[in-house]
Length: 143
Image (cartoon, rainbow, N blue to C red):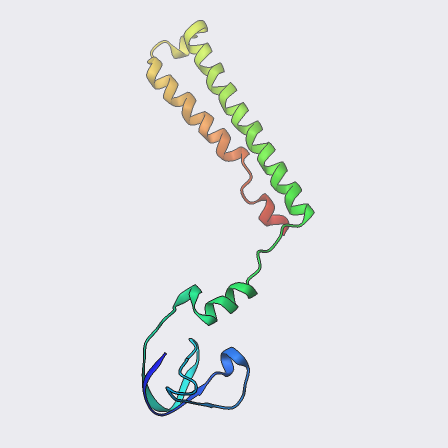
């Protein structure tokens, strides 16, 4: 809101599209819109709305639209999720199998390895399987 002014002219073309400068005064037209440029004069203002609450923010929020996914992108996302689930299952099965080998079979090459160290190795291999199996870039590679 315009409080004090001295020959103030405003270019509102960025917001309204009007090519002519507008004379502003406190009596007839005291409102200034964000994103507009003062062409001549000076003035003091009180901001009553900023950001999304301002006129510029309201217009911008109406223009922004969330991009919807195509059917191919939806299927690729589903496939990537399924591959991730299979990878998690394979990692868990690998961890369990490696621990069963250490606990029940205990072959000669694992005799000098502690159970904690073997569990850590099995966990690292399981995490590696998950990282390799989950295709993060699959949906991006197709688009």
